[in-house]
Image (tube, rainbow over all chains, first blue to last red; front, side):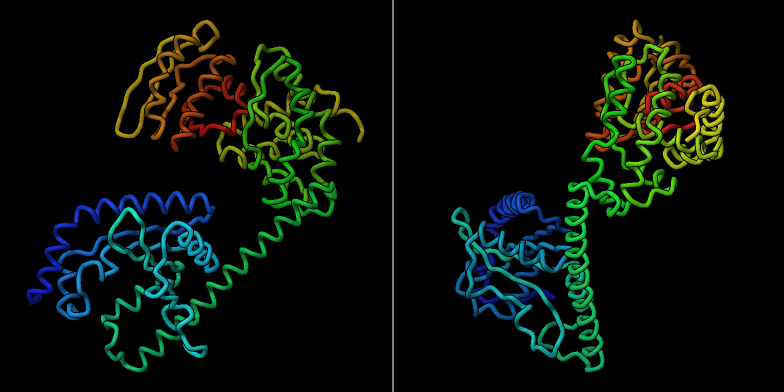
Length: 354
Length: 101
């Protein structure tokens, strides 16, 4: 049913219609500014949403409480933006960035996170009413986490509007759910914070050279690669043909080193020491007599792993497993493994005692 | 060295026929250059009839891969013979491309 509006409300509706293009234009400008702000602040958000209130929604609002507003400027949610973060502590970071970018109307802004009693659980969200000099109307920015957002949506989906009494047992269920999600939000933030501490610690270990104390995982391996541990071997191989070295990611080799029983960075360091000569001999045999003058930075680790597998008796099956791990399973990997086993039989490192 | 290019939706296929050696590389590079405009999708390098690849050929493949990486696309190297596969392996480029049999 179409809302019934008096003359005062109709004049607000007219003002809305006249200024709708202005709101749409400002919506785009604000989204762009917020995106750029979040990028600069280094906050990775789940989404940034925006909307301009529809005519029917505004008419519904005016029908209910039109006398509360003297003009369109009193309605602060015609233009609304919502920033949804992954972590609860990012809501504060976003809020602080928003405060720097816009003028916040503190009187009308609400931190619903602080409104709840200590023994109750419910909707947690931060609402800022903001303004900018270049736009005559205020607008709202909501900031919340993904979990707060899902709870708010689910709660809204029950069909009960605010102010209408929800049956007690449902209210209790929703409240219980809010409490659980709040706990989960905090746990996620805690895990992220602990992981950041762990990364800092292992980076320090790698930098100090205590490689035996640095367990081999994605973080430590990435830090280790920053020290260019295969650089000498790569340069030695490349110099054979005055080849250019093309830098590529060596992260796929993490799995191969783990497969070779490396459990610390110290194990990789020893592997480099023990098998560099073998790796070089493989390269000499393979590219020494060609005119190939470009190699990738994975040539060193690749040949190291091949030399190690062959020397430890892993044979064709071991090499194939390595290629399957790096390149995906393929019958062609069997052919290459066979070729490498045959080639290595003639290489000096295979016939030297360790 | 012959190159034929076909486009289908978000996928562009370049069939390479012959020897991609240093003398042929400049001409092939020029013919493949327009593929970089489609680098946001999938570039397939069909190597079924490619008999040889030199360093210059590898550089052409790498420049396509770089363009694809920058635009969020991918390069698939299809049906390479064993000799070319060995070149990819011995230079350390094997795991850089998605290689399909």
